[in-house]
Structure formats: structure tokens, C-alpha cells
Image 1 (cartoon, rainbow, N blue to C red):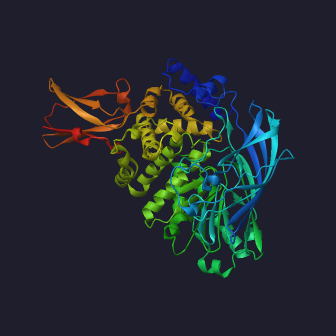
Image 2: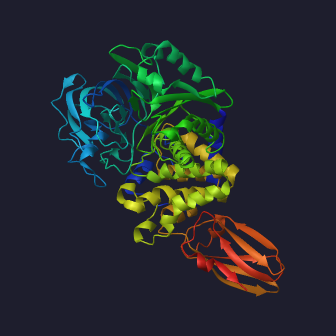
Image 3: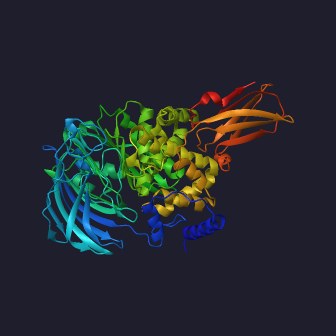
Amino acid sequence: MRKSSLLKLVLVFLFFQQNIFAQELYMPRNIKEAYEKGTRSMDGLPGKKYWQNHGKYDMDISVNPATKMVSGAETIVYENNSADTLRNMVIRFVNNIHKPSSPRGGSVSNDFLSNGLTITSLKINGEVYKEDARNWGTVGNVKMNKVILPHSKATLEIEWNYPLSKESGREGQIDETTFYVAYSYPRVSVFDDYNRWDRLPHTDRQEFYNDFNDYSYTVKAPKNYVVYGTGDLLNPDEVLQPEFADRLKKSYTTDEVVHIANEKEMSSGVVTQQKEWNSWKFQANNITDVCFGLSNHYVWDAGSVVVDAKTKRRASTQATYDIVKGTDFRNSVKNSNYALSWFSNNWPGVPYPYSKMTAFQGFADMEYPMMVNDSQVGDPNFAQFVQDHEIAHTYFPFYMGINETRYAFMDEGWATTFEYLIGIEERGKEAADKFYKEFRIDYYINDSSAEEDQPIISMSTQVSEAGYGNNSYGKASLSYLALKDLLGDEQFKKALHFYMETWNGKHPIPWDYFNCMNTSSGKNLNWFFNNWFFSNNYIDLMIEKVESVNSKNSIWVKNVGGFAIPFDVIVVYKDGSKEIFHQNPSIWQTNQKNTVITLKSDKKIKSISLDNGIFMDASPLNNMLNY
């Protein structure tokens, strides 16, 4: 038995020994059903009957810069590993968000709109279906003539095309000869154990939910266009001139920044093979998505960094950008090297799982497997912060198959947390705290509208505007940092690793996280999860009174807002001395509204104040008492 498996069994045993009477957490009916059927388990592990479906995608995609059209042909071998008989094939095409008829979370310009997907051929198990997808939104349905039985496979063959939108966001035209091509192929939507077919439309606000699939894909682009894609480039010698192929290979083994192609070389047309069209071949397995970008004038930098100290495994770090307009990106490879190393060795402390990370200059500030599409901001510190955040998403949602559409806090909250922790190393704690409060917490805590205090567990599609953003980013991040303070760094990291190892390559839901943290810590933390995720709490402490009995001072603190946060009690004595008493969130376990802190010192007090740090207080004026 592997050591990790033995550890899991020990943790599960300890959990049940110590938590037989654990407080229950609210579950929607469909989630309860998954646990009752045994696909999920209350110990945090996948249930004995857990399953997930899988696709093997083989795709040929062409991009025509003259017409701005993407066309492709794909074969999908889809495995139905469920016990259900599938009568429909639900196909997702996110780029139909550009169709005028698609629902969206906000207004768009005419340049955003397009005709969307056209399917020119569709076969399922060799049978032709007359479906052109012209009436589809971001999700389409095909009623199959023959069902797909449990534990069987089906083969889909699809030919399609669609226009790249003139207004680029997460994808589209960056400039006349630069394109970011994401969500570019029809895919089988997720069929899972708690919702069956995922039919929620993409509205350009909530993000994505995909199966772990295996991908082999070829991108056909004209000569002088370099293609940067998810996965390993399998044929550099077939698409690059020898000198540039050699530079790329060299970059795989060095920490130094290699300038693979500069502006003059790109404009001179000496970088790629001079065939009319080049076919760039990529491969990536057990991954939730693939995408690519291409340009005939972007410069190309690359390097690499060790991401696993034990095996000395390196990951390639690449960047491509406009030499004039992309000044932020001149440090992208260096920043990626630092981020990949730091995330691998510190928080979350899991080796970067992929072979490559590419930073592409675009407009989205958006993450993709092995790639980020970031905008030029003109501030090197903010540019590094954005890149850190997007790279942190490697772990959530890509290492863990998070359902971002329903539970955005499961990935955005963690990326925000890791962004803050790496920021402490990069800029110091004072600067990182200041930035975190200003950028992530201030607008939330100083907006008293009712929507801000909706429970974090609220489905992300049901919370809009700032309520969505703060539930997903700031509030969720604060919950993770509060738990880190409660458990301490060592135990918190062990619990986090247990959760990540258990659900890597699978589809965790919030209750799997809660149960994993309970099991791995050996504690019943449901009081904490109820407090943070299932309540309308916010952050607001106050000093209610101070009592002196027998020369001992007792500070009565009221938790007006209700969140179980850590805080410091700062006592300044009349002799000029000062003491700081840190209180971790466990102080709220038995009484979440009031607590009493008794000071051992009998010295005369000048002032008492509460400092919540990054847990910004909605009413800070009542956090101080002067004598």
C-alpha cells in the first residue's frame, strides 16, 4: 500500500473517532442524493461509486488571418462511465456568447457580436445528424437516435467554423494579425453525479466547468505566424527554422531568458518554415481545456525553472508580446519562473503539474491550462500581481476540476489567497496587506448593500455584480486565511494537501472541501464552515466594555458582524509599554457573538484597541477605548 493511501485511512479513522456527532452542514437535495448514492463520501474521499466521464479529442484547426475565421474537424471518443443511459448529447460552445441571441451578464458593443458556430458535419457513431447549430446558444442539445449505454463509448465526428470576434476579451482578435483562440471547439458538456448534464449557459460572467480529457490537436496557420498553445509542441523542427527550433530547445534547460525571436526576425519572415501553411502539433493529457494564440509580429521569449526539487523536473516558461505596446511582458518569463517555483515550494506547496506556462499579451487577464492571456497595464508590480493570480489558477480550477460556474469561490478564492501570500514574499507584508485590503476587501466591507452579505455558498449564477465578485474573491479568500490562522500553517498545509491529492483530476464540490478539511485536521470544523459559508455574516467587531476585578482587566468583545475572524488585542499601558495578544478564530467556536479576554498584567492601561489586519472592520471607530 502506498504511504499516501495509508495516511488517508489513518486520517479517516481519526476523523470518525473524534467527530461521530459532528454538526451537519446544509446540503441541497441533489448534493444529498450524491452522498446517499455513494458517489461522494462524508470522509471527504470520493465515494466507492464515484465516477466521471472522459473524452479523447483529436482535432485539426485552421485559422485564416485574412477572413478571421476558425475552422476545424474533430473526433471525440467519449466514455460514459456513469450508470446512466444517455439519450441526449449535450454540446457546449462557449464562443456562442458572441451571438446576439445569447444571454449575457452585461452589455456589449457591436464589435463583440458575431454569427457564432456553424456545424457543417455531425456524426455520432457513424450516423449522420442534420444539425448546423445555428439555433444553439452556448449549450446545444442533440437527441440521439441510439442511446449510449452505461460504461460504453461513443465516437463523435464534428466539422465546424466560426468567426473570431473583432472585440477581444477572453478570446478573439488582439490586433489585425494577432489572435487568441480559446473555447474554439465544440465539446461534450459535463455529465456528473450531482447534476447530470451541465446545461447552464455561459453568460460571460461566471466561468467554466469541464471534464478532464486527453487532447491531440494541430493548428494550421500561414507561414510567419508562430502558434503558442496548451500542451507540448511535438514538431518544432517542422514548423520553425533550425536556429529558432534550437533556441526553443535550449530554453527548456536554462533559468536564463532566451530571446527566441526578436522583432526584426519576426518582421523579416525568417522564424518559421516557409511553407504556405504550417501545421503546429500539440498534445496534452488529463487536462480540462486547450487553447492557443498566434501572431506574425509578437516577439518570443522563453526560459524554464525547476518545479519539482525531488525529480529536478523543469517547466518551460514562455512569453509573447508586442515589443512596443507590451512593456509589462519583458519581465514575464522572469516573473513566471519566480511564481512557478514559489507556488511549487511554498503555497500551495504542490509541484507545478504541467510542462509549460505561456504568458500571452491580450486583453482578458484570464487563466487557461498552461497559458495566461493578460493585458498591458503599464505598472510592473501590478502586471506581476495579475500574472501571479492567473498562474495560481493552475491549481484551482485546473489541477482540481472545479465547477466554476456554480461555485466560483472554490477557485477564485484560492487564487486570491495564493496571490496575497506570494505578494508578501515579493513586496513585503506591509505592502501586500495594503494592496489586498485596497484591491480585494475595501469595496466589499464598505458597501452595506444587502447583496454583499449573501452566503458564500450561494450558487455563483444567483449572485450578481459586486455580490458575485466579493463572494468569489475577497470573502472566500478571507475564509481560507482565517482557517489557516485557526489551524496554524503546518496543519493547514497538511489539510490542504490532503484535499488536493484526494481530488486532483476529479470534480470536487464545496462539501468535499469541508469534509476533507475535517478529516485531515482531525477536527470538527463544521461550526467554522457554517459561520463562513452558510451565513449572512460580515466583519465587524467592537469593544463592548472593560471590567477590572481584583486588578485584572477583562475585555468584552462583541462580534457584531458574526464572522469568526482572527484579531489582535493591542494594549498600551500608562508606562508606555505595549502588548499584543493574538486571538485566532477558535475563540468564536462556543459563542460566535461575544468573547471575553482577560489580561494577566495588572499594569494601568492607557488604551485598548482591536486590529483585524486584512479582515477589515465595517465600523472601526468602536474598536478602540482610551482611558
